[in-house]
Length: 423
Ligand code: HAM
Image (tube, rainbow, N blue to C red; front, side, top):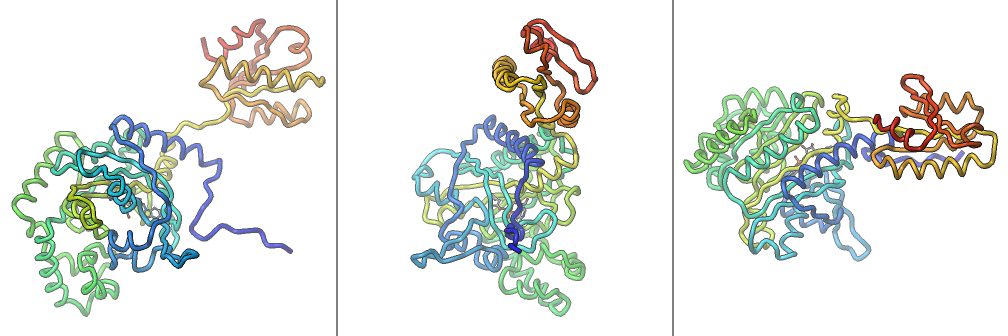
């Protein structure tokens, strides 16, 4: 017996029963990007592995254990992108555009991380992201939050999502805080989980993110990052919070929000949803003012976020706020004549031209009349235009409302159009 080909674990098909929902969500994201005057940027899904090692950070989970890396035929180390920010920075530096001005970009596409698949976590997943270059200060931070908040409202899921924010301080503050945190945690080293104990030397800030109860208990009395922020950063963060209040966007300050990528500086945030289970972050990002220069570009303030589309689509699906896209009008060629098929195709063309907002489909599968009507009733379409012997022999159009069960015959095409469009 031949084996049926399988998809790779953690890499799913998105089937027609879901793609309409994806398209609905994607169209709202792209519309938001357009009305906020962000421009689309498309980068390759593969890059030199070194790009991510230099930006995401060598001691992060993504680089230590999750990246898809392989050698190409020339022995170059290539990676499937685990995220979009590094590629956008590379492309922006290379294009030369960062030498002046403000740039607002959006992007969308598949990302790859070799994680253990579970609900809300795939090895191939999709992100919609935005990145802004050339703006310091809290106003652009507020703009990003406003952009994302508007999305949840447009999708009807604003009650399912909450905002968490934090400020990581400048390099100096983080350095002093890291030392204090390590000092404190060393006193409790014996009670830390293995991962956290290892991170004491590799990436101590990430310990704050631990989900292990014993470690969380120890962290409750740990020094606080907010006590180490410079006066300037504290003032900036307050102004951001005041602006969010002005915009009437609710938030919680989460002092343990540190993010899993090394490039962040200053303000960071996550939108989380209780509708998702353990993988609750839907949208995450923050400032990364050092990365452009670290990758060889001009000193450039930068900020961005990425939304996990699988997770966003899941919340929208649970909320049932998305319009279902089905054919709205079905043409049913039921006359016993060879002419009826071509006539149905011609009628479909006329209907599509007259009713561009409707989706019009011809029931091409042959069968007994009863079976054809039954399939039509199950199709989700509201209207069926019936092409029987009478309709073929003279100008008349029979319209059946499949929801109400009523059937009316019209004597002109314009009357038919009027009835379908509700005029
Ligand atoms: P991230 O937090 O690694 O940030 O990912 C952003 C979002 O992508 C997450 O909140 C989650 O919704 C989704 N996501 C991540 N991994 C998976 C997975 N394995 N399966 C399903 N969804 C996932 C970044 O990627 C940054 N580049 C965000 C950013 C842009 N920061 C500045 N600009």
